[in-house]
Image 1 (cartoon, rainbow, N blue to C red):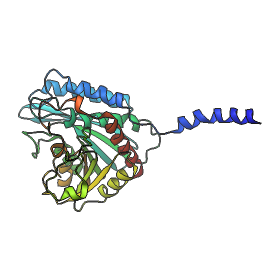
Image 2: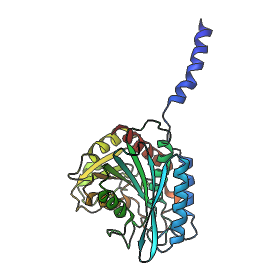
Image 3: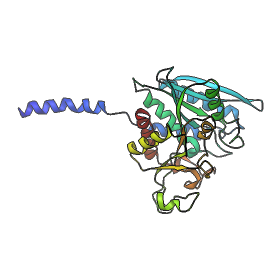
Image 4: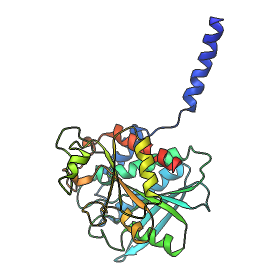
Length: 306
């Protein structure tokens, strides 16, 4: 009887392991980041050939994950730039947009800003490709021209994308921006804020992900942030504030707000924590890829729940 029970348990163990949900792979995240920080020139607006090479890489990775891939080219000052879009789920269902920009500011590697967001986007694509029965359409969008000199202008890739959805009257449930998700510091005093007293609420250790949204327009952003915090295996702080508060709109989600869509930002808080923001020291060696993987897992979990 004992032998029979042992044999039964030995059969159940691999079945249980196979049933476990897929998780983000830190080795894959590292591979994507190594590619992004090793381009011949920095992936800024001046190096269009580099941006095109990165766009082609993103398209290949999205296709391998099982996405329906399209490009959205547009012209700026006589040059062609392109967003890359990978779609999962029913083609005609209302969409959820998850986006990350792949360009950098100036002459720096941009490992955290925003290599981590792009790497998370690609790893999310691999995980979505393993979901056979998605109820909603999820579009993963890699944007160009988020950084200066085009930040807050209609030349931002996210503005071009959001406007195209609005003009075509595409039903959109909401949008999530992945912006700098790889830098963490557990030491006291490493987390800063635009308003000093916030430290009393959120703490002084830079060891969490922030889910930030503005007041109003919460039909999607509010439940997504709630699920993200509940399901994440790392600390998450939900943050809601007026749109004028410095930093709350410092990424691609701001353009979806402009067109009335419910959108939020997931971030390690950028320059409020990472002192190498927009500097040559924004390198792969400073990142915590285990926690980046956990942050990515929580995106998938929230998408499947929201």
